[in-house]
Image 1 (cartoon, helix red, strand yellow):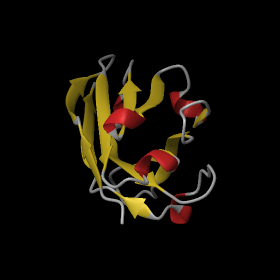
Image 2 (cartoon, helix red, strand yellow; image 1 turned 90 degrees about the horizontal axis):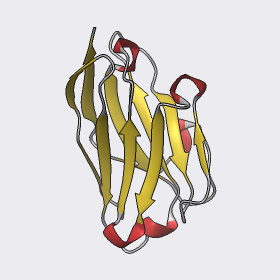
Image 3 (cartoon, one colour; image 1 turned 60 degrees about the vertical axis):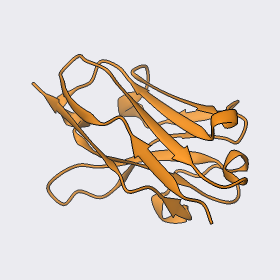
Length: 124
């Protein structure tokens, strides 16, 4: 069993920054790829944001956040981070971290464990 807890969301003005944390429990967390996903208001589907492999040596981002967001991990702390810079109103969403057994994938429904989500609101 892997439990995930997100933290770091909040309200920020456009152009500002936030750092999200995903803290995982269990000895296996450091052996799992971890992704960040978001779900915008208005019934939109959950979408991929970024993913990192087990040792942090490989990352992938959706096009809309490339150059602005950075995913990283500290396996000694069982934590994955999402540094978000130059935030835009369209980044407003509930952000979730997720982990899975197996390789890196970008599809939300292939992830096994999910956190409860943290709200990010970017004002214009």
